[in-house]
Image (tube, rainbow, N blue to C red):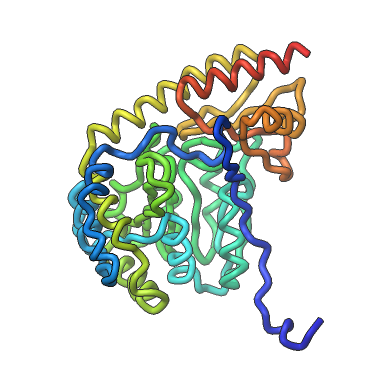
Length: 352
């Protein structure tokens, strides 16, 4: 090892889902929305002022912050935006998790959490889900340096009821509690209504899933104004211009069209519920999803082998070779037509 290598920070990076570029593939592996963004985005593209790209964007992202504040009925001082919820969460880790005590998050959860903890040198402990993959609220009633968990959780898709979410917050009012709601719009109950009650709560959401904007990288957090100020202080110390001109412009249009938002999320929920019925009849079992994906397993077929067989047919799902979940596949809910291709393959595969 060369001398300078001793001073390099080494981490095991997050591994995203595959992003294949094929014309006729069925892509059910990264929880993207199968429907296009709101029509207002296309209209905004047609009239976008290209000359504005030579100028820096608004560092306060005021237009987007204001429309989010209006939509969620909070003050602009309670809203923070970033380049996808990953950026928002990374900023939150840097800002709020600086205790010598370990932060807590589930053992089966979004796999970026331990990456950030290692990168920012934050001590952490994972808290085991129970045998049904559920968060046990009482396991978080202990000394810690902060808490984060997704709701619904990923990759299990299970929702923790709002009463239990509040119970975790109530037992941890001396630290920051972050509820990561990337999938909340597919049937779960948001913790946003608790923000006014608890000044240590930060709720994080994203445009990538329910609002069909994964390619634009827009995320946001809502909390009390003091938390948001601290987040902005860190952001401005890191990069004042995190949100680009196009993200700000198109993001505003997406939030404005609530009718389209509810229409597309409604379609996904309907397709998900049908998928539960079809896959259940095939012998698959899964936690009861409140997200835009299912976490499936079958007693007669190994998940790894099924994953590889699907891939050979250009049908992509997500497989995790991790303890407790290495015989499960995470399957994003696509359009009805995409799901029918998936079901047809499974029927053929299971007849071999």
